[in-house]
Image 1 (tube, helix red, strand yellow):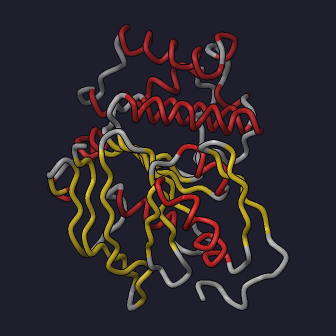
Image 2 (cartoon, helix red, strand yellow; image 1 turned 120 degrees about the vertical axis):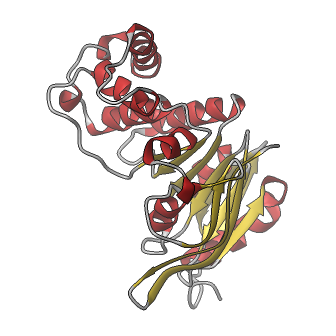
Length: 265
């Protein structure tokens, strides 16, 4: 599979403190990876660093091109970032808001053309329903807005999509709809990495799961090892015993009786 994003010895420092240190991660075309970790472990920082939004030490490239050598618009055409939360322009129609995602492909001060508006219309209708297309974005529920933000990010056409908790605020059905949409993007050749808190949801879709511990170390578990390694690895990550039930290719995790003495022991 072609390499889409590669980080080697990636570190993020603020003052004398390292938020992340010597992280190595490579994302390939056609894979959906999930990043798990407790609150405060640095998941959002890692995604922002991989998107080129933070000053970093180390090597970071997209498609073999150093990310720091690209202009902001060129960078977004390679790597798109869906934040954990974001504001919505007031009084924008849902499809007009989604069309904003195509701006990296337009010239300065250019407006989306008919083809772009049509694509945005179809995307909103497909994901949220035709009845949502003409609604004001700031009138949507929090869950609907998350889906709309995903559509807007998809409009960039980026080869790499980095999503920070894309299912936050979504109901049970829509959480799976989001990952169905992300999986469809990987089938078109994109590489996707999502920060997530639900290991059951992660294991249902991920080709690989990355575990970012409180000590800022990054561990990777391949799908072929999910059944053998994930329960103990995730349990150690959160400092608790974790049991799992497997049904086909799905894994369902639940807390065990005893907690670990300390995380990552």
